Length: 120
Length: 120
Length: 120
Image 1 (cartoon, rainbow over the protein chains, first blue to last red):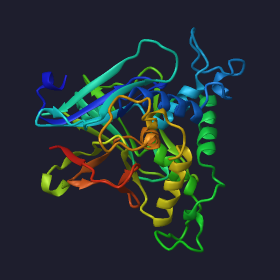
Image 2: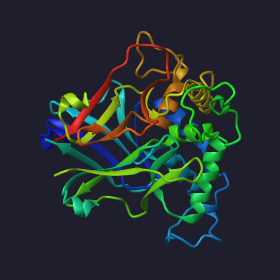
Image 3: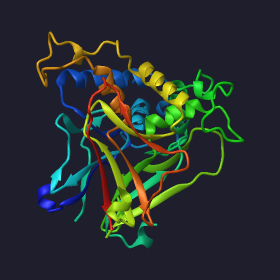
Image 4: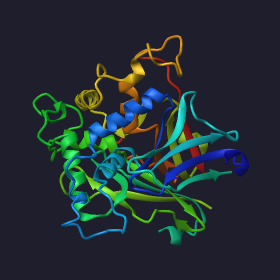
């Protein structure tokens, strides 16, 4: 993407168009990924109490396949929708151990991520 | 803002100039907003112990209307000062459920938010 | 940096090339810095259980001076690798109390931070 864009000096913005799937830069070590999943579950447990999950009282933003995902929104609040990575001399400046993750916080599904390269 | 800027390809950076008010992208569902307020209160309770709130020992950065807000700084640490959203073909690329929030973590007051559109 | 770049309208992206050192904008008040360290320790304790720290089973990404830092990765997940600050009329738009921090989450060591100024 960055090479194809021919941008020499700029920013790559990796952006999730969702509120229950986040973008994060971290290390891709399999055991760590499990630690982080456990950590997020501890921060906002899937089976915790969320008004957003009470479909008997909620009226807004209901879809046909609505499922209880209050925990996923709270976890997303901690992480955010995007990460920005510098491009210098046409190269993405990720550190040695840095990898970019789409963090699925709800159930498996198709997601839309924009990799937006700006600069010159 | 984005239309007025006439930027076709770029980034909208929504930036809070504060350390106790954050910018986040999430879903605007009234019950969820209450869940998230409760979640943040659980993460860093307003009535918790913070040295920053002990005005008998603190000497730095004291203002005339200083009030105890250690919890708000800690919650801000989790969320950050800004979100960046791609602009493509002159349109802000927010997802279907995504809305941009100024998250007030301290007491109600006037806040300054910069909506900074860069690109061409 | 911003002045030297002569950029009048743009973004300063302050970027940590690490997965155990984060960039955050917050207030530089000495007691608050101790509160935030304690807050992060509470969120992901250094002595907690992390599979990433179990060198008897972990095989990936091992270095010669590997040390247990699962807590630092989890804390980094909460904060992120960068902050972006608007530049308007050649000036960095930090708010009155805002300062940019490199947050060391692991042990003291040399770190690499990119201050990337883009715009025109």
